[in-house]
Length: 444
Image 1 (cartoon, rainbow, N blue to C red):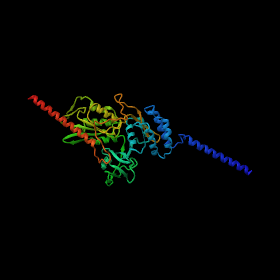
Image 2: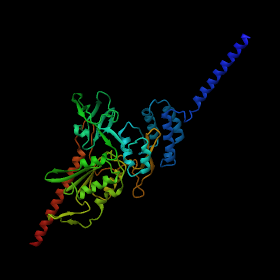
Image 3: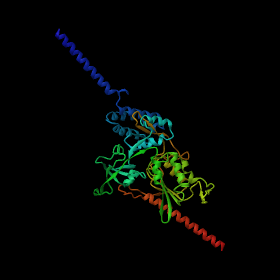
């Protein structure tokens, strides 16, 4: 009797072990159902499917998208956080060899900046965002600095005007070594620290002995308004050699208020009395449309003169017909490249700087279940029906190299643009003087 029970128990144990072995084998062979998949795998699946259904090219640039899924899915399954998964997902997206195609998480400023740009005048997208931003505002704590990694080192590549970084004395070209003794992380380093002093360790020159500590006070950035505020802060008239050179940095031209602000400043505001204009389109984001150039290309309309009670005459013209130069670099992307192309086509003025990045397709963000999103190219773009700038970019008329590392705020591209405007004004003055002499001689 005991032997019978022993054999029954033994057989039951063997059956159970066999069942577990079979289940384990099935688990290795077949992926988990989506309901049981880890969060990183769920997001990966969403990104893959979003691309499969919405990428502008139905042939996915000749990429075998199903094979790509099989290649990267096991790698994502081994990740332990969405940050680790993001690296793998972006490797997958890079296989498409297309701009405007990237995965973003809440750990990078671009995540908030792009959402802030795309939510404007988009009620449906605003409703989607409510789940992750219940207050209705897309905000983050930051210092207003863009960075670029070069050979394993992090350098400040651009600084928003009137930002905490600018006020603290940080400069383009500074190497960021640490924040409060820890590694620099553009979001985590300043999260919850708005209004509080944070110590950065930076290096201004290749010599390590030039390291210094700088205290900066982060602030809350509203992603919907931050670029217009920086544009307003950048707007100024530079006095040089007795001339008045207007300057404005367009950080993003994706919203109507940004475009109207430039027009208002040129015709009625701070730049109306400038004799020439430097239009800086470097870095930041794109958006907007080619109508942005109308103020420079339209034929001159009638002037309007108003005389209030004090008797002073105020005359305005709705177009800018004074000298203007555009500044571009590899950070000028998307519609900014289209503007640079149009600026050259219409021969409005010289284009100075370095070649643009060649990122000219139309993209839009798709939210994932955890609030991350994939920014995806959804439409091909051609200029003049046949000209495609994607992967090509726009070359400047006057190439001015810019070495970012330890630049110590030197800006040779901006300086060359100012020089170009001084040259144009001096040439115009000389021409007018010659014409005046001719008229005098004719009258004599």
